[in-house]
Length: 238
Image (cartoon, rainbow, N blue to C red; front, side, top):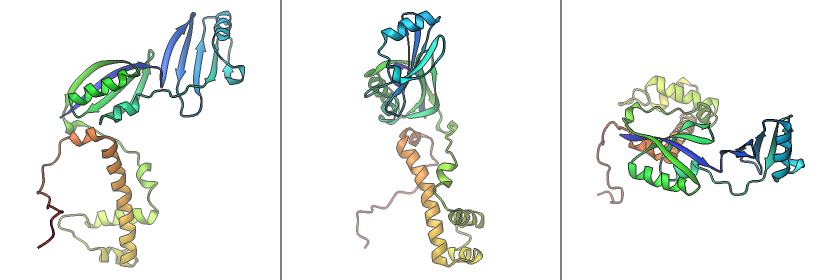
C-alpha cells in the first residue's frame, strides 16, 4: 500500500495572491531572473494609486490596460515546494492546481512518517493543510512517461533492433532466438546488432531507473514477489 495525500499550500513562491488597497496582486514565479506579477484593480484610479505605492519600475512593465498591468519583479531565493516534497521521498502526481491563492498537490508517500516530515519541510516556507490522506493499493497506480523521453535518446537503428528483438522472442524465457539470428535477419554483423540493441536497452532502462530514483514512493507499490535470493557478490567463487 502507498499513501495518497492531498495537500493545500500557500506561500510566497510559485503562486501567491494578495489584496493590496483594493487591488488584486497575483505573483507567478519563473525560472528566469525575474518573476511576473499581475495587478488588477476595480478601476483605473485605484490601479494608479496602487501602482505608485508599490516598488514597480516603469522599465519592468510588460503590458497594461485601463485597470490591470503585468510587470516583472526581481525575487531573490524564492522558496519552492516541489524540492521539499521530492526531497523526503514523496512523488508528485501532476498537474499541480493553482486556485484561490493556494497550490493544490496530490502526493504519493511511502509512509505516514514521510508525510509528517514533508509537512514540516513545507511549513518552513508557508502554510500547509492536509485535505485528505488515504491508503491506495499499489496496483491501482498509473504512471505516464512521455514517449519522447525514450525515443529522443535512441537512433532509428536502435529502435528497429529493439522492436525486432521483442517480436522475435529475444526477451522471452527461455529465449526463442539468438542475437546472431536476429543480426542476420537485419543484414547486420552480430557485433553491430548487439551494439544497437545495448544502446536501445540503455535508453529505456535509464528512463525507468531515473523515474524510480526520483520518485522512491513508487518502490512501495505491489511487486510480483521477493524472487530468488541474490548471490553474495562479495564472496569469491570457489
